[in-house]
Amino acid sequence: MPYQIFSYSKYNYMLEKQNLSDKLSKKIIGWSIPEYDKHERKKHWYIISASVGLIFIIYSFFSGNFLFAAIIIIGALVIIIHDGREPMIINFVITDEGLIVGKNFYDYDVIKDFSIIYKPRENIKNLYFEFKNVIKPRLSIPLGSMNPLPIRENLLKYLPEDLERTDQPLSEALAKMFKL
Image 1 (cartoon, rainbow, N blue to C red):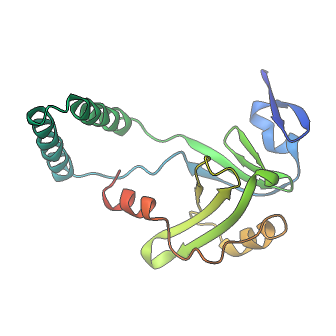
Image 2 (image 1 turned 90 degrees about the horizontal axis):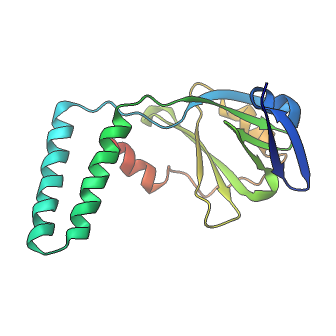
């Protein structure tokens, strides 16, 4: 079986890829999540998107902004290619030393705080992690059918909670609204 070396803090671990959580530390709680949200788009979504894209391309040619046209075309190709594949199911594990997301390990030392947004009526059930490194993007983990209370209790042992966040980030709300 192939091995991979994962490095974090001062330690190097030689781990089997499939037994990452067992070798690193004590697993507290874990569940499977999709790699990304796949939205069901109807025919009219594609028609509206193609129309808006075509209008932007025509505008970019009339204004002489060919770079904008190239960006619109590349964006359309990315959406078409991305829409044709299903999201992979990855494991998310909370351990006593950090978080495991798929094959990535995040030590608690690199995480600034966490927050849980749980609004079942609005279909918003997410766990968010902010990193100390401002360049690193926010980590959003869907809770699915998990109970947020034991997750919160366990995370409070290792990380502070951001109680000021009461809604999902604007970027996620817009992505959900436009089905991106």
